[in-house]
Every structure is written in C-alpha cells, then in structure tokens.
Image (cartoon, rainbow, N blue to C red; front, side, top):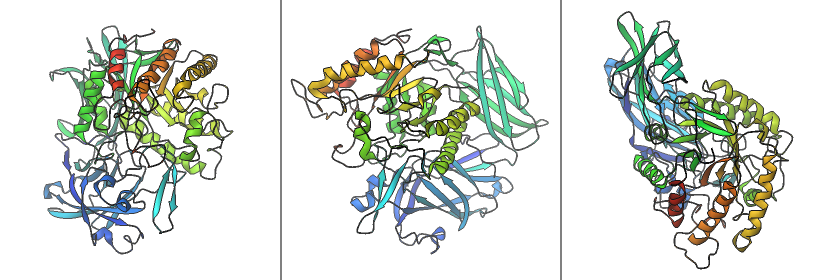
Length: 606
C-alpha cells in the first residue's frame, strides 16, 4: 500500500473529491455489526454530519456518553475514467480507532484518533457506479493508547469512558474524508530544510516517490514567478533575495514537485511553504536569527455542538482573536490538530508547538488535583505490563505527526508528552527512544520538549534531561495556595524557579500552562476565586514571577477558550480557564493580555 500523509490537492495529475456531508450512523453496543454484515449496510441508522463529533448532537445522555463500537456509512461514485489509476480514500482522522470497508471488503485499519490515514481501494471499487463505504470506529480508552484512560462498565451494562485527561472524550469522523485519484507512480513524501546565506536562502530537499523516474522541483513566489529550480529527488534550491516567513508577516512560496517521463508529467504535487529558520542559542529562541519571546495559548479543538469536529468558522474566529490579543504562538494541546489549522498558521504567521496525543500518563484523573498541588501519590506509569505496547503506539503517533507536519513554517517545536508521571525508574527508558526518534525524523532538527507536571520538580524529574527547552505547567495561586493565600503561593513559586535555574544548563524555559477557572458571570470586589477579578490578579502574580527570571522565554496561558470536560465536582460544564468563553467572547483577562502582549516587544528579554 502506498501510504502517504501528504495533504490532498487537485493538480494536473491528481483529483481530490470531498466525501463530507450527511452520512448514516449507528451505535453497536453489543459489537454485533461485523458478524451481522453491517459493512454492507446499517440496519437502523440515523443521519450524522461529517466532519463532527457525534456526542453533542443528541438530546439523550446515553447517546452523548456512548462508549464502544459505532458505525458510519455513505455511498460514493467512482468515475469510469479513473480505471487504471490509484483510487484512495483519505481520512483526516478517525477517533480513536477504525476499520474501513468498501463494498463489504475490509481495506484499512488505523489506531490513533488525531492523524490521517489512507485506504487504497483501486481493486475493490466498481467504476462508473456507486460504492458503499462503511467505517467501524471505537472510542474506548485503555492504558496503552494515546490519550490514555480506562473503560468501565456500569451496573446497567453500559460502558463508560474514564479518561486520565482533563478534556472530553469526543469521537467520530471529526475531520474531512476525501476520495483521491492518483497516478500509479506518485510523490508520497517530501522534506525541506532551510539555510540562510546573507540575503539568499538555500533549501535542501528530498522527495520520495513510488517509481524510478526523476523529479523536477520548482519554487514560485507569491506572484507565480519561478525563482528557483532543481532536478533530482534530492538537491538544493537557491532562492535569491528571499522573502523570509515571519510572525504576523508570513510570506509563502509555492513548491511544485513533478515526476517527469521525458516531456510528460507523471505526477504533480504542490504546497505553500514559508522559508525560515528556528533555533535555540544562549538560552534564547531565534526566528531567522533574531530573538523572539513566545506569547499565546494552550488551545483545544473544541466548540459548541461540533465538539472536536473541524469547523472553519471557529478556526477563523480563533485566529482573529489571537491576532487582536497580540499572541504569536500556541500549543496543539493535547494532540495534533486538523491540517487546515496549520495551513492557516502558515498564512497568518503564528508559531506552533506541535504535540503528540501523549496525555493521561498519570494513573487517573482523580489524581489530577493532587498532581497539580504537588502532593499526589507517586505512581509509576512506565513500569506497567502495558508499557511496551504504549511505547509502540507512541512511536507510531510521533512518526505520523512529524511526517505530516514537518514542512510547516509555523511548526517550531515538537512536544513529546503532556504532564506524564516522570519521577519513577522507568521514565528514562521510555523517554529516550521517543526524543531520539523525533530528532531522527525531522530534517530541520526542531527543538523537543514536553509539558512538566507539578509533581516533577527540578531535583526529581527524570525526564527534563531530554528536553531542548523546559515547558512547565504550573498552577500556583489556583490548585496551590489559591485565594487569599496567593502571596504564599508566589513565594513557593519563586523557590521552585530558583531550583530550575540550577538545572537548565543554558536552556530556555516557557510556561505551557498557567491559569485560573473563571465564570464570566462572576464579578466580586474584593476578588474571590472563580471571579473575573481573581483571574486577572492571578495572572498578574504569575507574570511578576516570569518577568523576574531571565531564562523564561515564553508564556502560553491555559486556556485560549473554555472547553468541555468530563462532568464532575471540579468542573462547571467544562474547564473554565479560558481567556475567552467557549463562544469566543472575551473575559476581562483578554483585555489584560491585550494590554500586556501588544506592548511587549517581540524580543522581550533578549
């Protein structure tokens, strides 16, 4: 199978047809669908939009909270002129695992709910006819998957997801599905690496194809004029007087790759790419050789009704809010996002820390408060019977993420895990192969990091040694000594920061989470926790600490917007740490951040 994670496009040799729309949908709580032939047609389906999460579209709780097997079905037409070419179905994602059937025949399977995969169906489809596509999905959680959790069974026999992570377990076909027609000999992957030489740029490239014919690579400027060209599957493109890609000043070239057979084009693929460099030197982040201080958010793909389903209206609003507030960076917490978000970051000039879905590597969500208070029981997560399978799934997800996202100018770093329990003996044996793999896969050698949970302190963390920069998730003043005790929390915070200074060894630090739950309806003078006034006071205390430590080179507040979580006594219909509401309207904190970030120079603390 010619697996490729290239984004689907139309070109002289390629066709991409959207299969999005209203599909058929049915729960399969007894897992009988496979044996009963549901791959050939669902017996009692309802309508379901694709892309979307299924959960929030129902009005009964059993459907919203459903855990187990479920099916999607649609019909698609394959033109007769596609005969003899590669016909492929491309899923942007399928959460969390999927088996794909065409005309009743299984054609693909995939584990992991946040990255794309293909099903090649050239030999299965009927040409000039409609064909049946059925997908069996499953959203159960376990300890060897990403993200991690467990699945319990209630007394009534229904399964229930018990996530070890603090966001809702949305599921379904949440990203676009496309039908592709490709040439038999095709481009399946390519990589670029940028080097600056005065006013010019040297772009080293490699192309991977399925055949022996050579390639021609051209670079077009924003006006469509050819500025560089090279022949071969490997080479270096010289771009004179290069327009560099920058923050809020994004210039994109079009890279065109053609497989040639004499004068004939066998395959043509193109992608918009920004030319830029990103590095760490002397404890500073350098974009195109110039210092830059990161400011922005941890985010989620999360919105009313749609859940985690791709919604371009929400995407557009999010970028407009981030531009208004003065942000320049966000982390794809806690999973790789839909590719369309990275394309827009490339176009708008935003920096991305790209995170693999390695979250929930704590024993349970019930340890969540204790973990953030620094008082949680230390339970080793990387010494279990499930660890070998977890590591293999982790490597697969990391490989797919880097393969998919490595050419985006916006992506400046890889986040390998979020808040793992990393003080036990098995930590180093688990971390090292992952950090090594990320370095091996990425020709640009982007810096690697992971988000460090509260229980992992400078003197106890066994994972921090592998990070190229330290990313802390800290909640002094919220989970730790909140409210009137915030003055004590600031002292405790500074004491920990003094400890980190001793182990950084010249590496920069950023904060990937800090925040306070805030109800937009609550105002109180003087402040109390959960009021908008307290959120601003809390942020001010954190920023005083950040500004006093020169090695702090970035602040990504938690969270951009309120988001859905599992229900519980800690959550009022979700996590309310958003600077914006779930409807993308500003809380008071948004105006506070706008005042800070729009006056903070890009090279703050350079």
